[in-house]
Amino acid sequence: MKHLLPPLPYGPAALEPHIDARTMMLHHDKHHASYVANLNSALEEFPALQERTAIWLLLNLGKLPEKIRMAVRHNAGGHVNHSLFWRAMSPTGGGAPTGRLADAIERDFGGLAQFKARFDDAGVKLFGSGWVWLARAQQDGGRLEVYTTSGHDHPMMQGHFPLLVNDVWEHAYYLKHENRRAEYLHGWWSVVNWQEAAARFERSDHGAEDNWESEGGALLEATTRS
Ligand SMILES: [Fe+2]
Image (cartoon, rainbow, N blue to C red; front, side):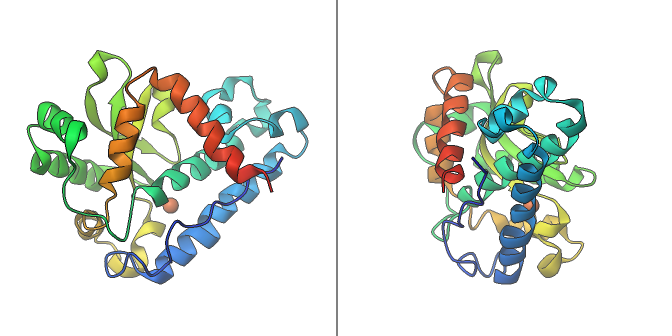
């Protein structure tokens, strides 16, 4: 089985004006595609590993041959994170979360405005390339936290279940916003997909790790079978 690039869940211009169509096309069709191609190429000599989901590979890096460990970390991470990122946005996004996720944001951050400020601040301060997340801790009563990862590392690698993610690599915003990362982060709230975050919050309730493992399997099997 080979990993395949999942299609964008909307057209490349659908998130305009907040994210421009050219950025979306390059980001999905070139950047994300190259992570998928590089992951397949790293696994070429290892048929047994080709049966594994990208999330399994990320969570079991120590079991991989050393010569491909770093390539898998970068490229399986790039594949998994971008797959989540496309779904974290929607042309009908924006607004505010409702229900239990809204209650949890109130409880753990003091309100939506405070959460957004924390998220934007973490995104601005993240040095170099990486990701900013709303994640749920597996320990500590399942508290919500703003969390960042460098490169393409994924929160589950350190026991945090991702609910929402924004890409703060320069390739995500530089064509439109140039060096103004804060402006990009601010505009992103207009396309944020709270429904997806709320669905992930519900899923994270019961044995997040097992769920995430099987979810990763389901997500990536759907995209690995041609
Ligand atoms: Fe990206």
